[in-house]
Length: 341
Ligand code: NAI
Image 1 (cartoon, rainbow, N blue to C red):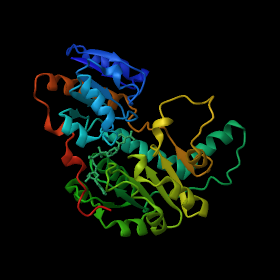
Image 2: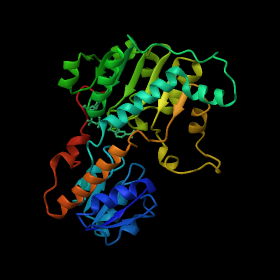
Image 3: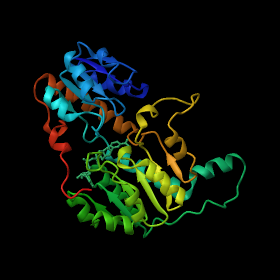
Image 4: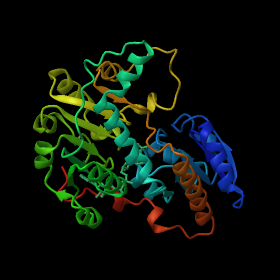
């Protein structure tokens, strides 16, 4: 199959080429991201492969469909950048990589926690400046702290296991309880309770209409003073302006973000010689207790191998008319979840 691979990053090419060795698809790598103005690049391509910063909204999907595209292979688990209802209406099959390495993302969430807690980002800079002063570097023991995990799917489950290993108490909120988490001793509570009791809160749910701005001004007010908030899910789960206000009031201890609401214009690009126009983001990076990574939670060798292999397998399955239902993104996955807020 001819496949236009949008938003290709140099680190992905060897993984995709290796995965494609036996499959023999005609992969055309495009550095540009998908948008209304670039959709015509896929004219004549039955397959298109997208990454998280690509825009597959209704108009873009219509343009792809008119150009002959019948399958979209997402190189991600998240699919909030695709208008699934429109894809369904047009008869475009959307396939994703539902699980490539939950460990990669869960471990990154823990990395953000530990760097923020022990102020390693500040310590790194200080020792390079030969400043061996410890003032301002005070952290806390993870042991016996309460962690609240919002979303206990594949990533949330791994995160619960790691945090229990630290000796944390782990609370969780998820409309669908994960029996493996319950067996580990994770306590499911309602969101208000989780906000009120947690020292650390980690977001591990997908971005859906029900989770959009789940962390808003009201939720932030309910959190313990000094709470650590970690988001490795999708930026839109947090209302960034409300977060900035809470940070300015000093209510939030620290924030670790691997995702940002408007990351599409920033992340995955070297903008080091540009003036960033997004004033909200620029304000966010000025806080000494905010640590931002540019959506790299998935970036391990193991995860990249799995992403490439599943993407190629999804395209091969589609070519022979037998897609795996667990990899197919359908309207059922975006239905509002009962009990969510
Ligand atoms: P998953 O589908 O296995 O688990 C998601 C869980 O969230 C499910 O148990 C679901 O019931 C729950 N959920 C849905 N609505 C909720 C709500 N309103 N409140 C609480 N829980 C809710 O997904 P997985 O693999 O664990 O990934 C989670 C998210 O992490 C993805 O949707 C994606 O947005 C993000 N992600 C981020 C990456 C990164 O590099 N930073 C890489 C991979 C995924």
